[in-house]
Length: 77
Image (tube, rainbow, N blue to C red; front, side, top):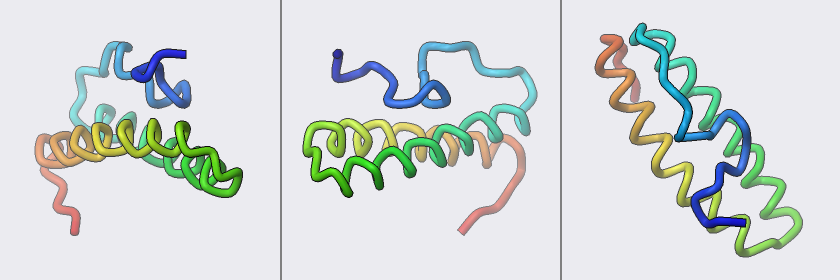
C-alpha cells in the first residue's frame, strides 16, 4: 500500500471536488471525520504506520477544510 493511498474512501484526495463552496466544505468535513475514526482505531490497535498515515492525511484534510470554510464564509474556532 502506498503512503499516499487514502485511508478511507472519504479521504480520497484524487477525486474531483464539487463546485459549490458549501459542498466542498461538507466533503472535507466527511474526510476529517472518517480519518479521525480511522486514527482512533489505529491507536487502539497500536498500529504505528496506519497512525502515521492517518496523521499525515488528517493534516492535509484539516487544511483543505479550513480553506473550504473560508471560501464558504464560515467562521470556525
